[in-house]
Image (tube, rainbow, N blue to C red; front, side, top):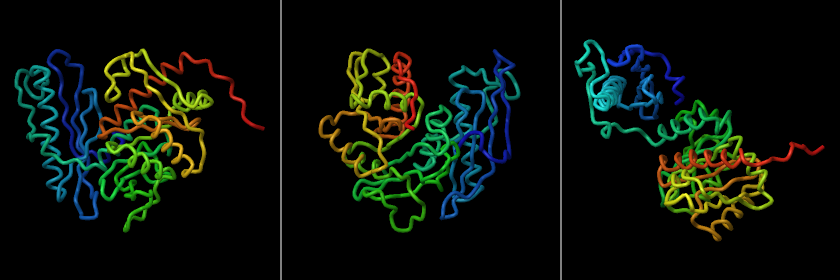
Length: 319
């Protein structure tokens, strides 16, 4: 969920900092809503002014439990901040560490994979890496048989909800009972999940830099990046001297053809962290959603570095 779409605010509390009274930290809670076919509820919460304003949806069997757990989740978040600040967060009285919220261990709060994926995509959208309906994103929910939860076709990436995801099989087809239309590139996700068996999450972004670089270097069939400290953000890379090869595939609407290209690249180099499709975008993956998200961040940082040092040919569309 996009933080700007937390929905109707039913409660909020403001805090200040003892060493900076002008800085306001606001804890907010949105209206609980049904989010599953079983009638379960989730309650959105958000902390503003603390550096991470992402919305977290906390689930419960009914609205009352969702609110109860949401309050405890806010309490845990703010208590953690209070400890890190040395007691500088103030609610009623300076020097009083009590912030007036119940607490629960955050590890006890279950956030569904669907909600986590939607929150991840919303963050990528805020960076400008998947605007409008661009991009597609998935998580592997089962390995045998292969099951992938993926974004539906044509959905706005800045406001995804779990209802915008669809469960597909190893051929990229919706499983029995699913009615949503999966992304046109679902087959590519299935192929990546098959070839890279540790890929638990696959993210496909459309940024300006990855689009330009893919188009620019497609005639070389790829590009190699080395010499940057940020390379170590890619899983398994230990030094800035490591040479990270990024294959570039010619763009086509034929998913079977792209699938065969991916299989060929895998046969040549199984240690890839991702690849580009020319004039299209980046595919990268990770064992977990967090790792895959980190790979997107690292690649986009590196692509901008390379792009700023590259002289691109003028745009010359075909007549």
